[in-house]
Every structure is written in C-alpha cells, then in structure tokens.
Amino acid sequence: MNALDILRQYFGHDAFRPGQREIIDALLAGRDALGVMPTGAGKSACYQVPALTLPGVTLVISPLISLMKDQVASLVQAGVPAAYLNSSLTPGQMNTALRRAAQGQYKIIYVAPERLSTPDMAILAGQTPISLLAVDEAHCVSQWGQDFRPSYLAVADFIGSLPVRPPVGAFTATATARVREDIVRLLGLRDPACVTTGFDRANLFFDVVEPKDKTAWVIDYVKRHAGQSGIIYCATRKAVEAVCQSLRARGFSATRYHAGLDDEERRANQDDFVYDRAPVMVATNAFGMGIDKSSVSYVLHYNMPKDLESYYQEAGRAGRDGERAECILLYSPADVQTAKFLIRGGEENEALTPEERDAVYRQDMRRLEAMTAYCRSDDCLRARILAYFGEPHEGHCGNCGRCVGDYATEDISESAQAVLKAVAQIERRYRSGLGLSVIAGALCGSREKRVLQLGLDETPFHGALRSLGRDKVRAVIEKLIADGLLVQTEGDYPVLRLSVEGRAARTDGRTITLRVRRAAKAPAGAVRAAAPSAHPDDEALLEYLRAVRLRLAQKERVPAYIVCNNAALADMALKRPRTPEEFLEVNGIGEFKAARYGAAFIAAIAEYEKSL
Ligand code: ADP
Ligand code: ZN
Image (cartoon, rainbow, N blue to C red):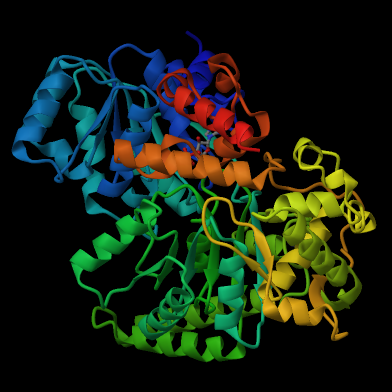
C-alpha cells in the first residue's frame, strides 16, 4: 500500500501536509531525515506512515512518559498495533510487551531513551528487525535547547549497536541553527534530508488585550467559550489560586496546577484536564511539558511572561490539532515589574561566576524588552514573533488582534430590543424554549431546515435582523447573556430565557452597548491564514456529538480527543453521515475508527434529527 493510502486508511486524512511527503519519501528510500516543524504540523505521521509501509518494527525514541502513552493510545485507536517501553510499566507488563515485541506483534514501539542501554533492548534488537528509528523531540540531545536530556546522548551508541543500521528520522519544533547542527552531529545522522516548514502556526490567532479587570475578562472569555478546553497561565501561585477560585465560584469546571501542590494532586488535576472532567486549567509555567492534549482551543496569559520564547512555547499548546485556536495575552504594565522581579530572583544561580551571572541578567532583560514590545505593538503580532525567531514575514497575517482591528463601543440598543422581543414571543409560543443558534438563524431570516420545521419562518421576528448578519446577531445575543438580560439554561440542549432584568429592559429605555472590533484594517477579502475548518451551523448537534464522544472515551478509558479530534467532530456535525460509507468521509476518520465508533455516532445523529 502506498503512503497516501496509509494516511487515508489509518488516519483518515485526505492529503499530506507541507513537509510530510518529503520526509516520508526520504525515509522510505532508506535515507535519514530531519524534520523541523512547529507543534501541530503533523510530525508523528512522518514516521508513523512509513512504519506502516515497512516490514518489521519502527522504534520511536520519546522523552516523556505521558507523550508516549498518548501516542500509543492514539495509534491503538487507529488500529495500529503499538506499545511503549518505559518505567511506568510493572516488570510483568514489561515482560509481556517485550515478548510480544519479539514475536513481531507491534508495528511501532515507543521507547524512553534511558531504556536504550538496557540488556532487554539489546536482546530485542538482536531478535527483531528494526526497519526505522524515529527520534521525537530531537532537540533534547542538544545542550543549547531548552530541554537537554543527557539520556539522548545514548541514542547514537544504540544506533551503532544495531546489526543493520535503519534509516533515522529526527523531529523537533526547535529550529535554531545551533540546535539543528547538534541534532545531526550527536545523533550521527548521515546526509539527512532536511525539511523545515517554518515556525509559523497559522491556525493560532494572537492577541494582546489590556482589560481593566483581568479576572472579569477571563470569566467572560471562559463563558463565551463554554464547551471548549483552555489553559490560563498565571505568573504566580497566588494568581493561580485566585483565578481558579473565581472560575469555580461561577460554576466553571476549572482545575489548577503549580509547584506548591503535592505530586498526587498535580497528577489528579492534570488528568482531570486531559480527560475533560475539568476543561479549564489554571496554572503556572510548571504546567505543560509533556501535556499532549491536542484539543486545547485557547491559551490565555493572565500575566505577561518574561520572554517570547516562553510565551510562544506556552501559547503553542493551543490548537495542536490544527484547528483554529486563540492565544491571548492579558497585559498590564505591572506585569513588567513582576517579570523583572522574577529575573532578579533567577540571578542567584550559584553555579555561575559573577561575570556569567551578569551576562545572563543582561540577556534576560533584553528578552523582557522584546516581550514588552510585543505587548505594546501596534502592528502584526505574528510578524513580530516570527521576526524575533529569525523568520521573515511580510507583516500582515490577517489572523491576529492587530491585523483584524481594534475595539470600539457600539450602541446596540435597537437590535437588542428585537432579540428580547423575539425571546419573549418564543417563550409564549414554544413552551420548552429554543436555543441560541436557531433563534439567531430565525432573526437573520434563515430558511434552514430547523427554522422551517419549527415554523419560525412564520413568526413576526423572522428576518428582523437580517441586515446584521449571523455573527453579529450572535454577538448581540451573547452580550445580552453576559449582561444577564437573557439566561442560557444548563444541560444538553440549553435554551434562552428572558431574565427579570431582561423583562425590565424591554420597557425602561436603557442603552445597551457592545465592544466590537473597529473596522478591520485588513483589506477586504484578506485570506484567513488558518486552515478553513468546518463550521457547522448546528451548535446543538455539535454539543450532542461532544457528549457522545465523551461517553465513548470514558468507556475506552482514553481522553476524548483520542477518540476523535474537534475537527473530526465538527466535520461530522456538518456532514451528518447516515451510513458507514458516509462516516468514512469524515475528516480524520480512518477505517478502524469508523468500524469502532461509526455506529454510535450515526445512531446519535439519527436520534438527534428525530428529536427536532
Ligand atoms: P506534532 O507532533 O507536529 O505537534 P501531530 O503529529 O501531533 O503534530 O499532529 C497534529 C495534528 O495534525 C493531529 O491531530 C493529526 O491528526 C493532524 N494531522 C497530521 N497530519 C495530517 C494531514 N496530512 N492532514 C490532516 N491532519 C493531519
Ligand atoms: Zn497579524
């Protein structure tokens, strides 16, 4: 089977992403390869696809137990026999895994670098032909990278000890020239095919805001992004505690992570986050290394970090599934003081001479300046980040807060009244109430199925706000919810109700305002940099499918995003498959997953449609 067929059949993707094809072709031709690609670009497929094409087994060196566990769970879900060998296994489990490996039962085995020099590995390598060796997070071999791991230095020896040298693929998101040279030299790569796709994460939207009340802003944001998973980074433990507490007090499932908590609680909280029991994580920068949750839709920074390296790394934990995600930094001038304080605290490194300490201090201050300049920048934020990392950018990305415009306050009293009136009429006419999406549709004059089925096209408010467009109408409704004039009920099918306050607002002639982005500076029709993703009209169906996914995940004891990612779920809501064949058409659904979960999702969609 050729590489593209493998990508389709196992992973459910239609085409290769930039760089994948070149690396796969090199490895399949027996050549070494070095892939420098940003997080979320799809490095795993670069070795997983060849692994499934080649005879024998592929070994993947990976630095973190949690990453390995995640990758193996994903592969097993895709129908690929895979396993990991690391210190989290009991001796019994280890023996079983080694025995199965020797019998050739696995196509892909993840190994911790520490294990490479064990007798077990030597025996395994003697018994089983290793057709490919992949080194994940390859920058760990370099002292110049951020996460140097001495155990990576053993990789070259291990390769040298193999009876037949397989092609070696090395992968990293860290792209400085020095680190790259180290990888080639220290892993002993031979004339590798080097593929660099650049630093840019096109699917991430960047913004810096300066709210008066950060906590209120965060609460509002989390509310507007209910159902999504996000991380909120704070500079101090105290801030973590306070923000987490505020969110919980308002009923959000938030959890926290910082060095002041004991191991057990940290692990439990991390699991709650990964398994979506607590979709919002409030944390210090101690959180994140080794977290592979790909479905993080936003990363907020409650405080400005001390340099752009940290910022880009932390913000980059959003959107690893390639879906549009937001990275928003809440800036306040006081953050500069906190950062300076932290930098001074780092000065007391005893291992350094006074001169070295001074040099480090000055470098840290320069980095802080660049970070601060980013926050105060009037022009493209993405261009600024990329320039900092030495990657030229034409300077207008169209997908950051600066490119799409700034905010202004707009009087929306008139359209707000139309919404309130509509909800009042709906309350009289449809006793159980209706959801936000369909109300917005009706107000815009939509003739979509749901609107017609409910007879909304015959109501007086059908099309009343046609001129505003759907997004704007949604924004008005959301503002009314935020102001407490409308209430959104809890549960699987939330509906809108008029609050007491909302009733009062219908007659007291108050002014209702909305903070909106001022006219976009972007030229009309500027292309959205992010890959277009499915935007199903039917949010309720998406919610419903999300619940189905969570149920399936709980049954399988894996995180929800491993059953299928958000992109697949959105595509499902859009395509509404009715048959197994149609289900296979959903992006990100391979044959194995279709066989495993197709029936449950198809039934759920049918059930949903019947309930309309
Ligand atoms: P990385 O290791 O580079 O951070 P991953 O390998 O985890 O990235 O892939 C990120 C996401 O991209 C995954 O959700 C994966 O399913 C998706 N992906 C990978 N290759 C493709 C492709 N060719 N088409 C569509 N999606 C892809
Ligand atoms: Zn921009």
